[in-house]
Image (cartoon, rainbow, N blue to C red; front, side, top):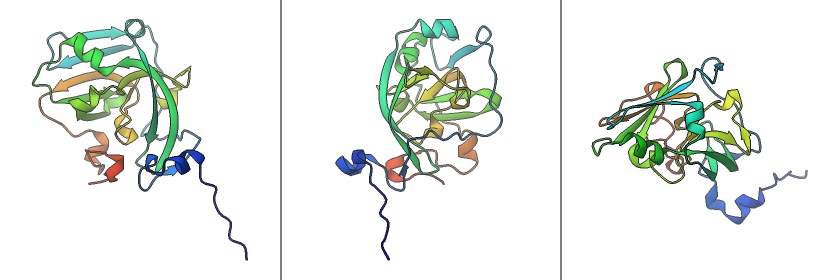
Length: 199
């Protein structure tokens, strides 16, 4: 009996270390979230930036679009074991938002506040990395509602739940606080290369 072999993606073949352990490559972008997809009126949407900052901000969607933006080409990795290569995200670097607000030296963590009270956080060095964005476009199109429209975080060095959807607030904090998924069993560090999936 002939055994069928699954074709290996040439990108993985060329660089086997590109796919983190335990992950399976997909061309699709699976939709995973808790609760319903929200509907936003853009003229009423605001992004609040607060906490350990010199200047609290309240940015409209138009304000956000007028800020300096950049494209990030990256791979994304979900804790549920799928990975998707070569995503093009476009948005405002989180480092620029931190600069606008005057993040204080004691701000060691960044917590994202999202629709329906969802939160997640990362150490500030991940939020200020070159590939960390407040993104509003994916592959040249506005984010779909199920993928976080109008704005989501992008933190590609972490499992993708840390790239929170439907961001409404960014809080700079001196101390960390566990978010929704972290309180429900997910590993707060969320490093895909170490398979830090669960506590």
